[in-house]
Amino acid sequence: MSRRREAVEGSERQSVKHRPSSLPALAQCPKFESGGSSEFAEAGTVRHHALSAMLLGNEDSLFTSDDLDLDDEQMDGVKWAEEYIRLHAPTTDHPLICERKREWTGPDFSDREGTPDVTCGNHIFDLKWRKRDYDAQMADYALAVMEEGGFESVTVHLLYGAFKQVEVIQFDAASASRIVLDILTKANDLKAEANPCDYCGWCAKRLTCSALLERANTVAEHREDWALASYHSSEILTAEEMGKALRLAKALGKWCESVEHHARELARNGIVAEGFKVQERKGNRFIASIMDAYSKAGIERADFLSACEIKFSSLVELHAAKEGIKKAAAEREMERRLGEVIQRKQSTVSLVSVKDKE
Image 1 (cartoon, one colour):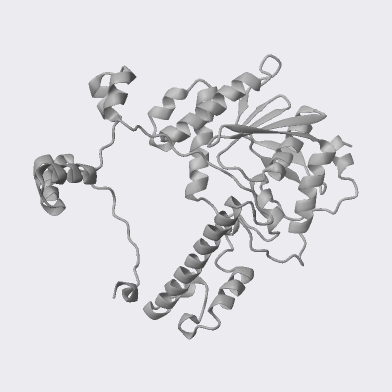
Image 2 (image 1 turned 30 degrees about the horizontal axis):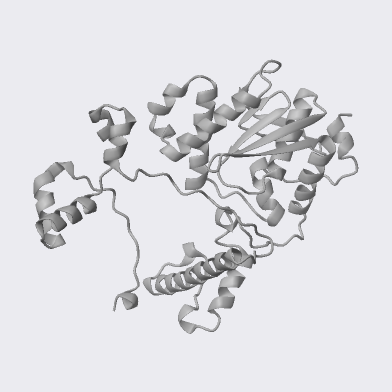
């Protein structure tokens, strides 16, 4: 019998398979179900591919494929992660392996699988962007690495690219199993109830979740103009009902924004909401003076200008101030002078309440 099975002997058998990445969400809500792709998830995938390309010596691919398009901040974070891995991975004893699927046998003898970003012997390196509780996901990865490699323990390096900070976690079979199996047992309990949490936005059930709908109903129950025949968005088919739904959504949204605003104000005064922690993000870097930057960068003029971004509105304001004319006139003049040089980003569609405009 393997060390993993010894560690979980006597545990209940699990009937539903969950990906390692869903475990942090399942820890908060046992009814969570991965909701497929999102802009946030897709950005993470791009960063992971970029990191693999760098580590495998194929960095040129980053600049030849639109699928690996990263802004300066993200590229900086990925390069920092690459440097950390090269410095701390035990490559003299083990190969560096990127994005390879790993498996371990669960207590019901079913195979569990996951794909850590980078492994090197009994070390796991996983690139994240924002700080969350990833212990359960990493514990699952650790169990797979221990079972496949025959290791007694695993060291996990969580690399937070946005902050350039590292969190190191040590797992053995017992500690990793305890975390993972506790979550899986609750997730497979047929009597478990949904618990609205931080991960609702990523859940496939968010539009039909009774716990979430109950909260919406509580807010709307004293407003006849918010009462809907159905609160499932795909079942709202008339203009009248959708109008009610949007007004309710905007009201809930404003309430949520207000709560978050006042929670931040309390945190600044030392009162941090229970179950949360203060997390500070450094502001993005920007160039205060383009002329000073050009004189000090040592980059050819044409190359330097290609890296600069000019706002059309800024040119209009400068021209209006210099000529002493109104902005509307300055805008027409700039449009005439620049012609096809002006490009317009893709339009977006939003719905604005007619009552709000009156």
